[in-house]
Image (cartoon, rainbow, N blue to C red):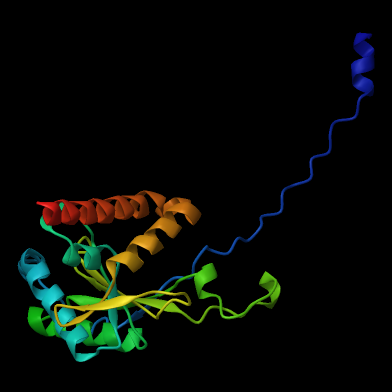
Length: 227
């Protein structure tokens, strides 16, 4: 190729990229009951944070005893039903309810009253197209939007234990009366965690951990019976 031939090539025409608008994976949560009390001081936040577990859990349990149709589930519920050696840390109390928004606001108001300031608020969060929560059958374009939502009671600071209210799932579950209110049974929690570990990679680690600790707890009970 001659040097003069290089000049015969036309420069490439580059079409400018058109930015594509991408919708967020989940919409921003709606906020309820924020600003319904005086702004907390740093001293109030520290005092509340120090005693949070002794304040929140009893309020939720009392509410569950009053409303027998609601059910505690999740890691906190499992912790309540197994002995100390088989508990695992968790930052949520999970509750199934036919009135999740109402229950969440009840607890939020009680927490504000206990703290004497606007220590908590409620966040409404979309659950997503979980196959257990679809309202219709058919191709994605024909399926109804899931009506289930989460209502999360969040306090200041946010690293404390939250209370997570959702409507009941569209699947088989079992519950048991324990401590005066209903929990999802250990067998049901075990089966659900096993399914989550198999089908949802993002949640597989904690789900597998729950399967293992429940099985170890059952095994420990068998050993005690044999003795």
